[in-house]
Length: 476
Ligand SMILES: C[S@@+](CC[C@H](N)C(=O)[O-])C[C@H]1O[C@@H](n2cnc3c(N)ncnc32)[C@H](O)[C@@H]1O
Ligand code: SF4
Image (tube, rainbow, N blue to C red; front, side):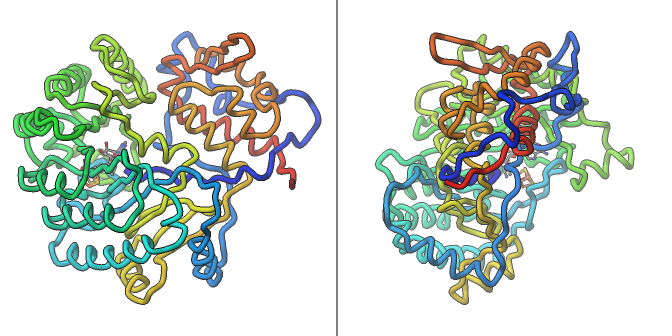
């Protein structure tokens, strides 16, 4: 999954608009403070509205300035450099799943071949830029859509081209995202030969009824068997995504999904709460009475609790509030780097990224993307100057995703004692059961409780909103 763009600009400290030593929370309502309830896990907020916390406001670059500015950025060779990642987007899927808002184009071999040819042109061009060659990349992620809808030869070529043209760190993580459907031994071998060393498959649910109603291809036995076969080769970490809250996925089915994950031998798992987007086929089918309602927030909260308990009982290592690893091989480097201070170079239609204090969104429409690439232009639909709050927002988003805000990290990025300033809000959240404020010597932490972990994105959004309105940039 393409992650939200984060943008880094640590040059300008942000300071409170007015002088009080701490935030005035007297005018905040339940959307920021949460509810005062004995069961904050289930009733703490009304519902989670999006998968990622937003990044505050950004200043768009005028369209006639985009090309010269991006060319200028890609000429830069002066250190220090942030850690860097490469994100490559493959916007095709064989079938649209009912719940998904990431679907863009139906897979057709001719369309994929044309796209792949343009992608190779863009890849070689961006790889040759001085900025790209100036420092090693730590992680590469091929996301979608469904990258495993490429042919075996294309997957191998993509990995080979990236390794040949980009400077990669010696332990660089190269992830291929996709699905189990038609992921044959030949494709797996080709991907390994291409240099991919991590595989992330969307399983969503193993349950056959849930899968069929969501328009997932293959039934439980097929998916479970194939994940096990891939995991047992021990060639590379095999990680799966599970969704909770899909129609027909009751608590019993969810328990079975968790058991199936464990039995599959997969090396890692993401547990994602289903986010209902208005524009998905699922929304319309529910409206027309063709599908039962997906789980409500309370049920999803119970499912999250079951997942967390299950992983703890089975001694899986927790990498973030919703990602667990079975062994030390699974590092999930791309996700942790791209959510923190790394720069992300985007490749492909619909890819997003950030380089040099600017955020980029590439054209989603294939004709615009191909037209730009074939005419030696960088295929950007939008470019924004990062907000002065962006670096602080990134620390907040990454902290909530990890389950802890470290006071020193937040203060260092802000350039002043922002953690102390926010203390009235943190104390209110503590009273409401979302966090625990911990002081160990001179070190302070805001630890998320189970309820806080479930509402992590909502809390991050609230904190970002509060800080953005209560502070002002100071030109250095
Ligand atoms: C963009 S998809 C790509 C994965 C791959 N194409 C597949 O079919 O599994 C990445 C992940 O986003 C998650 N996702 C998709 N729709 C979602 C939704 N409505 N709410 C939450 N997560 C969602 C799924 O878990 C999925 O595995
Ligand atoms: S879940 Fe994957 S295969 Fe299904 S529509 Fe979304 S991106 Fe495509």
